[in-house]
Image: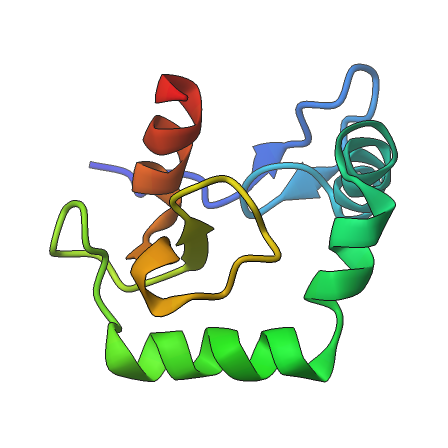
Amino acid sequence: MTPSNPFKVCPHFGCGKLTTGGRCPEHKRQARQTYDKDNRDPAVTRWRNTAAYRKRRDMQRRMKPICEHCGTAPMAIMHHADGNPFNMDDSNLISVCFACHEKTKRNQ
């Protein structure tokens, strides 16, 4: 039995660069910039880059390090139950993993 190839081709149309998974660094950066430009509110982005927000997120990680939805994966995202990213009340914050956050976003 031969081992599987750890390298994959970047899925960006016409790229062809080999990666260890997902897009190549150039297209990852490009996709992120496009997502930020099209989907993110600049005020929310500024807020999430403040020391106060990072401090609260780190505190949430220490208090609830495991996803509150599935109970198995580590916390990756501090989800705001009411959808307001400026509401940092303890009762509004939920620790979730990436997979559960995607499910939560789709259900809203």
